[in-house]
Image (cartoon, rainbow, N blue to C red):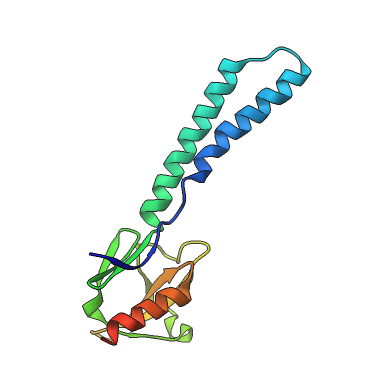
Length: 141
């Protein structure tokens, strides 16, 4: 199914931080004396591996995908048919956050939704306006 709206949660560019820092360290070391390329290579690979795990976790927990059938927030999926209305921000106090966390992920803004059973849940996205617009377009059909 084609996505109406999507956010990946993270890009892969943070994986490059480790090798770049290792190259900078190698360059500074080359200016000051003997060079240890094996040590810097291992440090760069170790940092890249740690960053890759972090990126994978962010892509799993902080991704958003909206299709005509479902809204997926992190690891939680909500059928679009269950959404009755997209609400204004004031009505979200005490609402359950989609995706399984206590709060919306850092850097995201909440989009409160009233479900068909009259309960209110909080969807979230980095571009909350675009998610709100896409959801409104889907439920008004």
